[in-house]
Figure 1 (tube, one colour):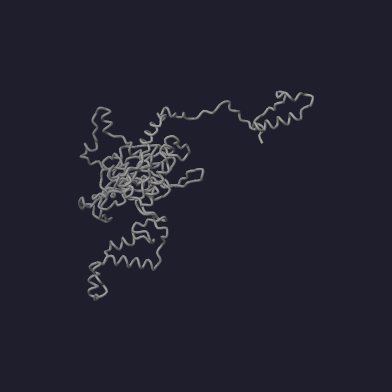
Figure 2: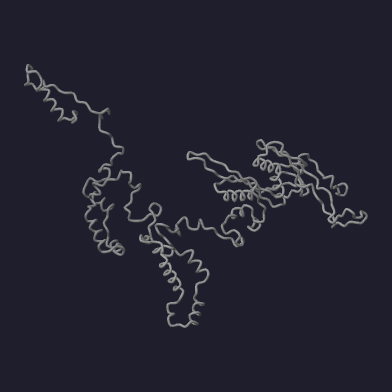
Length: 461
């Protein structure tokens, strides 16, 4: 019992007054000792009434002071169902449901909603005011137009599957044909005429659901069907096939690359792509290490264009595909001297890796049908010799890059670190950053001429 309550205070006051000395006069009520009460908690006592968080709207402000104003507000905001509305509702609901609806309307007085109506303040209240008479597509959920799935659905047994297969076969035979009294020749003729095609058989094995009571779509609680015709989503995730692709890109992998490069899918597939570097990396998270693969790929047309692409993924196949597509998008022109080598000597540094590239001459001629005892005085035609170049005397990764770009004569050195990733990046930057004779001529204001092509009739090798 709390001593802070008035009844407890009076009870304790009487006890203390009875235990007081008899010498004191008891006739005076003010002489009775008063016990000081205190709260049994540490919270401070409220000195005044707590103010509400929201200011109440008075009835006078709403104009609901007179009965006429209350009736007018009730009729405007809480009208009853008209005869036309009841007729529309009777088309959708049964007689029992209409009777329950009218009983519910009669049980609630609209004036009570006007005078005693309160807005919900709980956490599950609606954030908007509505009588829920209409469905708003933006706010409300979409109404279910299909019947719910059968809760007793189960996978077919062998006998049920056989019956379903026979029923599917009988669906191809017209109903006016009686196969019981037909001869073998007539049956064979009907089978040849109405038998299911290969497409129908394929649809049966792929689209026919193995669960009973599901229909054609196979919509069950265990395996719900995909939504079709959803507003805002319809047609967005269906890839349109281009007749120019000739069926080479059914999955739509090269559609973005085709738009970026302006080429056909057949031309894109003819480009050379190769994976140069593959390594496993890990990302440390609070749940542990997440392993993924990092791939570096190149793409080239063999005629002066080269691209570099890198990608990461937890699946190696996905990372390789993304790296190849990135390399195709990043294809850039590579300057080539005489369409076989580079311009001068180039050096590039990426991190601790240095790549040095140098141009080389094309080489000399050798006989196609040479023999050690052949008479050197015999004349040789042009078809009997072949021009052998210097070749690609470079590491194997730079070799693949040069072959994809169409470079034939080049030499390379890597004096420092031989990191595979940095080696490829440095070589790619070196091929792009070659000294351009046209830019040098513009900068000097003079015309540059290749002396080897002017003198000696161009026969310098």
